[in-house]
Length: 155
Image 1 (cartoon, helix red, strand yellow):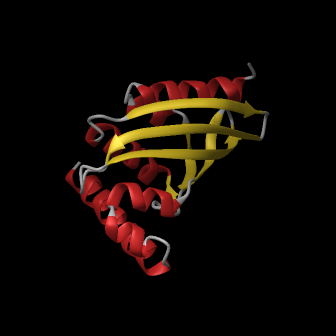
Image 2: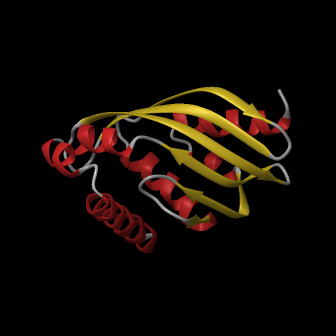
């Protein structure tokens, strides 16, 4: 394994253990993160996001595979199984991750998943009816951002 593949393996193994401190240590000081819900997070925000998700994800289970990386870029696939906190509905989220690296750390991290599939599982009927709309996506993003800001402010 090359060093950046080892870095990603360390990151996802820590995620499986909900070891957010090890996950946080994998990021560069100027890191960025985006996915379908959390958009354009800076390094401090992404570190707080993982801490929040690890602490609140009582039944969170992570599986990862297909880690590939070179000196500049990497990717992985991972699945998260958990109960969505707002509805207690069970979710299986299938994620494809893309990375860039700088000085042996993650510089940028972008996760891709099917938002409509996620809303149907996590939110139920409202997700089925409206999860495909931009307005619904923005509402979910705004709530996630508020939750993250509240978590950061309580620390």
